[in-house]
Image (cartoon, rainbow, N blue to C red; front, side):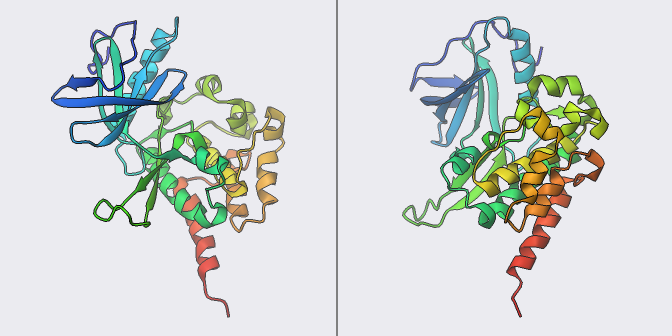
Length: 298
């Protein structure tokens, strides 16, 4: 049993709104409900300093206790081990009064929400959003981890505001990777594991047909390609197994009018060895295109 969750009970009760939670010298105030997923619910939260956070409260479905426990411990350990400015920050993790809490930094919205509401700014914002994401992926890979679940719903945006001049319209957007619940050491990655967690449309070609190459960190590169494709198109395309095997995502990228189309297409190559090999290499390709766009003409 993980030391952060001793004597973890098998029954959970969700908290009452605005009830203070006292734990290890901190006070957390649970606020409004934000959303839910397979393993629990997320609430607004503030600490004793008034910092805006979120409380992820895990509540397993009947018969899923071990799966829930393994995932929660893995996500907690991953977040504590992988500290980076572009990875959502875990402040605290504890079990108290038959409830299990992960206290995380609060972000304003997801990349999925930005895309769906037409606010992602497409090519204009792509280099800056991509740089934040790619730095985090590069950091994870250098530390031997594969995220394995990169999609617009797991990319979070923090909007930094001027607290001294609150009426200022100058905002800074910072993008971060979140939801490290299925993140694994690359050495522990295997096809059976990935094929039980991926949404069908997210499967990399090598997860469908191993003739395309080995399953490793380059799964994340393929997912980055899908992310950038969504960002450029302004929607989130879904693909069938056959379309993935037939290279429809790559051909869709090649058909874009975006100056970044070739960068995206290379990240979406079916054959792993022909794909862009690292997150840093993807960034250098984007940077080269950006410099060409910004270069004075004539």
